[in-house]
Image (cartoon, rainbow, N blue to C red; front, side, top):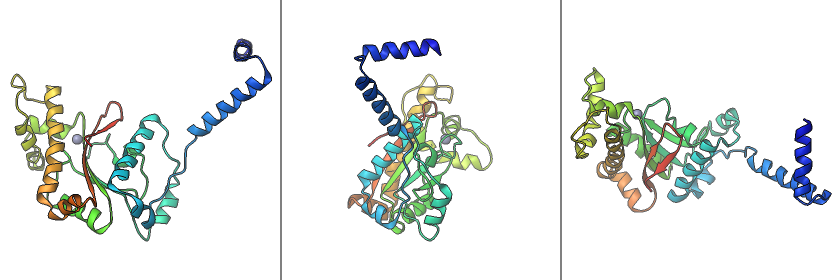
Amino acid sequence: MKSIDLNRRNFIKKAGGSLIAAAAGSSLALSAMQAHAAQPAVTQTKQTQAAVTPQTALQMLKDGNTRFVQGQMLQRNLMQQVKATGSGQFPFAAIVGCIDSRASNELIFDQGIGDIFSARIAGNFINDDILGSLAFACAAAGAKLIVVLGHTECGAVKGACDDVVLGNLTQTLANIKPAVAAVSGYDSDRTSKNNEFVQAVTDKNVVLTVERIRERSPILRGMADKGQIGLAGAMYDVHTGKVSFNA
Ligand SMILES: [Zn+2]
């Protein structure tokens, strides 16, 4: 304790030595602490959803991931959000992600109850039922943005690279095979042992999934063309917690 006191005294001396300087220092420290205090989350309503654009929705997810990475998540009373959203939901975005236990959409984007639609399937691809879910999210329920979210170290992508055969999983992995085929090169090793190859396939899978949403859903394509919704690809790094967006 004694040495800390001495250091503080020295610090104040260096900073000017006067009481005014010390007071200014502590008020700066206080405002810095207040800036880091958890801010309360806003529960989405019809009004807040109507004010969101595809661009602001993207920014909201980027900001949420930054908060997550920095450990500065918004303060939420989840049961209060349950009560507030019970009679109606107004989410601002829909995310197609993997089932991976490390890639929970709500957690990594610091979102709460009623904020985002979450479609999760091993390998984050789309089929008719996921497309139908996205049509519901955007055309019926007002979401302004669709994000296809891949992630590093994806077991489903690795399985597709290795031609894994395992009951129903075989058919699931078939949906990722076009991405494997679309990545050329890596001829020395096109298996899950080659991390660069796996990541190239993971990136390509996101790009192809975004393209397929446009190709296979006239409703969503029309909304995107009119600027009513945005469509973006993104990659979650399971080592750092960071999401990088293509857009
Ligand atoms: Zn995965």
